Length: 576
Image (cartoon, rainbow, N blue to C red; front, side, top):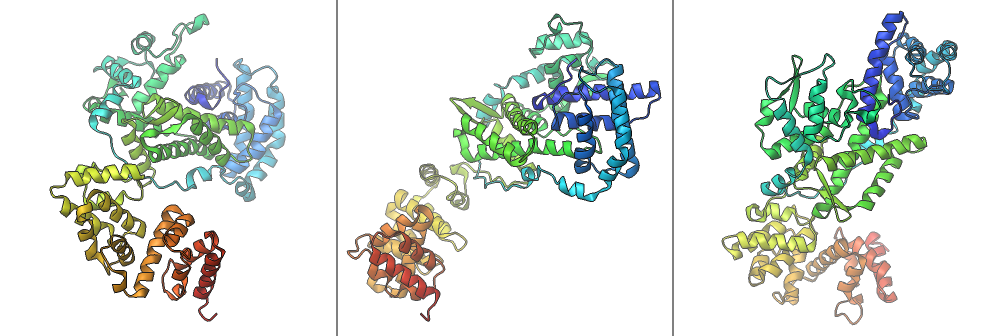
């Protein structure tokens, strides 16, 4: 019987935990021994999640760490319940010994019982001290509270691509075959709710789970629970509503069978990733461990959506896993840090098995079937995931909304497709400029819109831009029209012209950094732009300090840099 489990053995661990809990409850009744199976579940969860994962090996130091360190920091319980926990610990070790499950090298039940009796008063005192709960503040809070980066607009792949991806997921075929095998009236279950052995053997072969019904010749198969892959598949099928246990039978669910293939896959994947099993009412810490797994899944899918179809290099995913473990378990034991990392790798493997992620050429990325699953899961987690429309179907505001999120090449392709789909190119260019230069759009978006119309509708660009003189982005419009020789700079008030230049330089600063500001300022000016700085400090412009600081820090001419720094000082303190 397997009694040692690591973080990857979650399903096997829970089955053994439940089995031991049931046997322990029976043992308590048969021997009239005081104790609580829920406390034993708490003890086993601690051993698996925070200690060495050995459910059959118990020492006095193990008991001390559980009772005097972990419980006071993690468990909230009334005084009368606290008194019972050491009694349950001693009884559980006695049960293991009586059942022949206590490993060599463990403390004797008598030693554990005597130590628990001596420790009870101290344990109750520690549990009553509120400072211990404060000291045990959730080390996993960072997993739930850390800010996620913004997610760019996501395009849902065409249904044909999603369908092809779904049909390549082996588990979906297994679930369909399972449902067909369990068509009404279904298959009879054992009193514990497991398939009959004959059905289990058939399903292993028919579904190709990879289990060994002969147990490697080590013994006779006594329960389908001894077939871990089949058990995992049955758990998933019940969680996703593919089949259900009803009146002692395992029966296919008609509503699931009525779903189309893409919808069925989404339901299965969400059920698997969002699964939350019921826990002991005392066990806050194990719920935290579940929260870590969920937080890692969310963080990974955010990164996948941010990187798009190219995905992430496998090595980078490994690095992210290590960083995540260090973030959520700082200063914890090597076992716990390793457990968190293994948990993260296990969730990655699960997403790959479900066809949410795919691995190819050293990269891991969302599959076409996985994109809608990721979007829905992140929305359930409270994150904003904007959907990106097809260019031909998009409104002008939806296209302009994409400007901050796409790279130059992708954005040009998107706008070119959008313009090509409009019935009249001149009208479309005018609409695009009007939306880009609207008051609620920032200067980078405004300049991007001008540049795109200049590229893809050059014949109409000046006519589209000119009406926006003296509008919300007057400075950018001025500078662009002057650069196009469509406006005489001598006809423009010098203060307005200078303000327009600051707007233009600020865009360069935001998009390309200080070097771009210096390059634009110096372009064609024999003095490097020094003359432009004369008197500019008087402008009432919110971006002037940023522009002057960039010039003063990065201009290669000491004279120009000094003039910029002096202008910045005078702007900050006009009385100087």
